[in-house]
Length: 95
View (cartoon, rainbow, N blue to C red):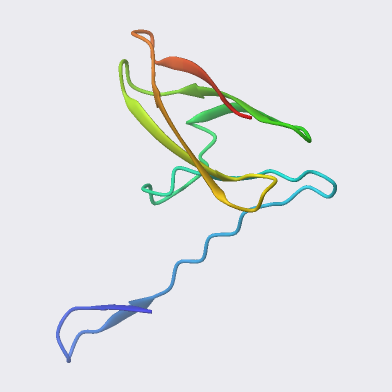
């Protein structure tokens, strides 16, 4: 729970993030953990999850660096850094 303001003017809020886990698929996409919304449809144009990988089509600002996280089949966190093209798109794969 975060609190802002003075003692007379408190605003409390909580932010919960849930990560879907598809039955039978060992990968879990965490997305951009350094963003307020980790898996925005404005960023992820497509996501395909299979037993051995997560494949994504990304979009954003030209030459933007995108930092992605996932939980792999060994149940450890995987990290991937992708630089978008000059047209603001990229393909990325956790494997």
